[in-house]
Image (tube, rainbow, N blue to C red):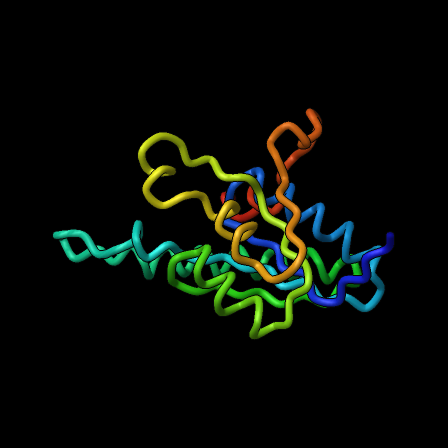
Length: 162
């Protein structure tokens, strides 16, 4: 069975696993000529906020998310893949499944598996779990064990150096 994907979304958060998910999404996009890659980073509004000293962490996290998706979009374009970076604030699994998938007519989502554990996972669940459950398209979840031992996350390293 052959799948033809024209609009591929990859969810990124600055983690090593998310960069590996991006690499997998690029590989899939290369096999689907003319596909468009949407690189999405959602700043979780339930975690990011303003503290009592007035520091606006949401603005700082959104600025990082914008740099992140733009860095990934630039990398995708080097592979001759059309790419758009999207950085927004919200609840990731809701924003992705209820807003972005429909708005951009996404037919495949690629994301890393969740690192959430314990009570937090029980209360809110993982982003990847929410995407798998509620997405109206195919979803590929990338697991930690699939990362090659010699893999280096270059884009995250470049952003860390700046």
